[in-house]
Image (tube, rainbow, N blue to C red; front, side, top):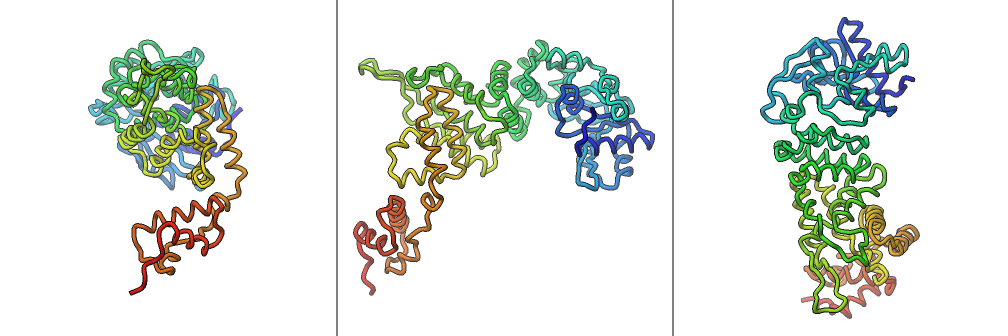
Length: 460
């Protein structure tokens, strides 16, 4: 059965128009792989013998995003955008990311042989598929992609050393595809990754960030990071995570094992399609533990392993990681907040009402809850604190957690206090009392502050 979604229909129309103009046109890459796996492709790429200038002449609205490499975006009247790429043969890759030059080709065979993995190297005749609905007869497989799909193997096309020399990012993509599809990496392909792992530094930090984020959010994040570790890539792109190996934890709180094992369990239990912040918060929440590990003191009976200050250290390490990977300020702020606050749930029964309400009104508190649930599930399994926090968060009226303030800076000025740095602690004290429900009016707030901070100075 053929797909009926808008991306498919747009790509089919483009292929038909190219064919009518006398050019070859196929669906290529991941969309063919996904169709053969029974999955719905997110988008469809068209490969063609038509050169970029011809593609731009044939379609009224195009964007030459990579015309030098043969790539043109074609946009239809409904706003659907499809990538159309000319068959090509790549020249040398001196930067480890893009070819220095390309030669356009009329040969689909030549185009396929320069691609990354066999499962991504198949072509589909969209016109034949539209007529018959038969994937088997409409698929052009010149690299053994269908056999590797059936065997659940990620295998580089041709010489894996050459494929990864050309484009270092392919090493991360191999890991990501293996994890997401639950495939194995072909031994020779894995050997080539291990041999070239150190060269991953040639890839920009932004591209590394994007691949890691996809691994964390596409499902099977634990498998992805275990493969990164086994391949040697993790030591190059996230050495801070490697240090979690063999860092033991107190068994009464962490029967599952060391910090690495605990973190991998969090990744295993990530919900489907988590936010970027939650996924990275799960990965980095205990990143400060290796540096703060303290074994039990033999002179103290019943002493245990401790990680004093691991949250503060973890925040500093996470900041370094996120800055290195060029995260946006917004994403960085939320990830850091998750790391910074993940241990506060342990004090939730002892919190004053004002402290609890301030905690519950943290931005995106649902993500803090989700991280705490993951943290407990991957350790002792006791969800008592989580259940209490969730109930408080869901049942407390907004006006109780974030009430309209009884007192502002203008009120202090009107009462005769000159503006000063003292305003901040004064207003925080008044808000705390309001959240504790010990004051209910502006007059009561001013009386409280006069008692604690003194009356306003006399007017000159």
